[in-house]
Length: 176
Image 1 (tube, rainbow, N blue to C red):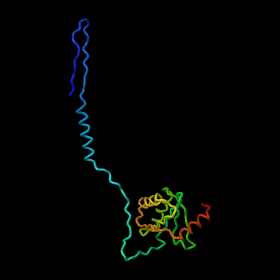
Image 2: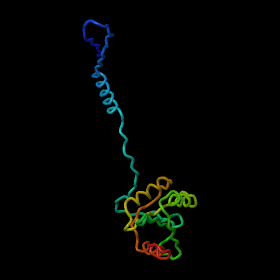
Image 3: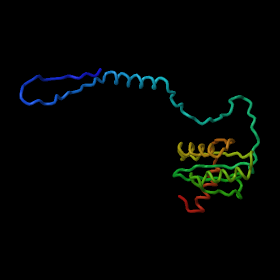
Image 4: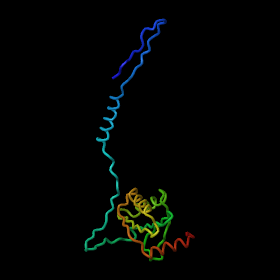
């Protein structure tokens, strides 16, 4: 533990006050520290990774699909360079209007909230990533779906008619 050692003897002459040096044994303190660290490491629960649940279709032979009204859905298409396009309707219809947005809270999030409020509970989103869009873009869009509470969505491959309607929009607006 702690001990006080006195040194020196009578050498004669002036009497000086004896300086006592103290030495504290830190071994019990270190032991206690390691015991506490070990205790807290063993008793704490590690944070489990949180993943988004993605429902995939069943691989059975019976392929029944749910009919989807175009008036109750929008199509979201991420493009390279952070561009994002969306439209409501069929891509083969010349009257379909494509609109551009971004990943900000005033962009895609605002579009999703407005469309969800306008359409209601049957609001469905069709996500069609372009061939040059990257994985981060798709994950960002899925995060926006979770933030806005959009539970009905599908991820499908892009069709040539979808690519054509987006290329036409880019050509009309001078986007390269």
